[in-house]
Image (cartoon, rainbow, N blue to C red; front, side, top):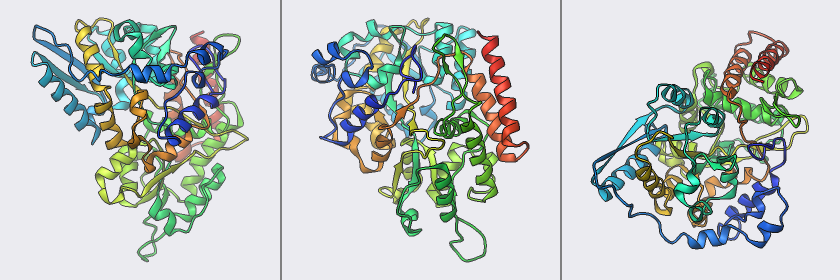
Length: 471
C-alpha cells in the first residue's frame, strides 16, 4: 500500500517478503537495500546496504560519551508504563546512569492512546522533553509543527545504514530522519494454540466470514453450566485509539482505507468503499452471534490481552508484543501462542502494518548530545534484544535481526504476516481527527445504534469535510 512519505497506494510486497524471508530463513539474514525500494535497482544492487552496514557496526555503544556537567535527560515514553516492557526501559536508564553518573534519566510516562495528543499539547506549550517516543500516526503532526531534529547528521550515516530499510522507509521524511527506529510489531491474529487444537480446528480462516465461523466454533461452555465461558474473539471495543487501530486493520483488509495521498495531490478517503460496510458488519455480527466476551464496549487492549491469558477468549488482532504481556500474566502459556495473517474480504490481498515505534529528539532539546548517546545505548544489540526476549518485538537494527532468538517460533506468524502488503499511516496532520471519527463508527456498530450504511454515510461526509477544510 503506501510506500513512502510522498508516494501512496504502491505495493510494498517485495519489501515485506525481503524482511520476512530474512528473519525466517537462513539464520535471520540481513535485509538488502534492493528489497527496500521501488526505485530503479541499479544503484542499490551495486551497493547493497545491509551487509556492509551490519559489518561496520562493531561498536555497540555500551560505553557512552558522558557529559562533564550534571544533566537531566527527559524522555516521554509509553512503554515505561507497561509490563514487562517498562522494566526493560527502566533497566536501560539505570545502566546508562551507572555509565554516566552525571546524568539523571527522567521518564514522563504517557499511555500510548494519549501520546500524540499529549505531545501536541506539550509542543504548543514549549515544554517537550529531550526525547519522545514516536508512533507513525504522529508523523504528520510532527512535520507540521517541526518539533524534531534530523537524526542523520546526529547519529552518522554509517550508523543510520545499520537500520533495516523497511523501518527507514517510514522514518525518513523529506530526506530527514524524524526518529530512530526501535522495534516493530506487525499485526496479525494472535491465538491460543492449546484451545485451538482442543476445538479441532485444522485451517486458518482466510476471509472475515471464515473468521466469524471459526470464532463461533471457539465459543463454548467449558464447565457444563449452560453458559458460555470461552469466546472466540477478544474484541477491543473501548472507544480509544488502540481499539480504533484494530478496527482499522479489518477496514484495510476489507478493501477500504481511512486516508491516503492522491496522485493528483492532496488526500482522499476510501471509507466510501464496500469494505467499510464489511468491517462495520463484522463488528456488529460478532456481537449478534455472541462470539465476544460480555462488556466489549469497555474492553481495551489490556483487558483483551487478559482474556487470552485466562482462556476467556482465544483470538485477538494485535502484534507480537501482546505475547509478552500474556506470558507475563500466565507463564504456562509460553510456547502455546501463535499467529496467522489477518483474513480479508472483497478481493483484498492481506495487509499488515509494521507498527514501528522509535525515539525522536526534540528540536528545542538542550541535551541533544546526551540524547544521541542514549539512543545508541538503548538500540545496541544487547539492549534491543531484551525487548525481543520479553515481548517478541522485532528489532530495527540489522545486526540484532541476525540473532537466532528473533526467529522464536511464537513470533514467526507475525513475521510471516509481513509477506503481504504493508500499510503506512498518512502524513496528513489531521489524521488523528479521522481516527476519532472511526472510533465513533465502530462504537456505533457495536451498540447497534445505526445501520452500517448509515454509519458509513455519516463518516464519509465528516471525513470529506476534514479533507476539504485542510486542503
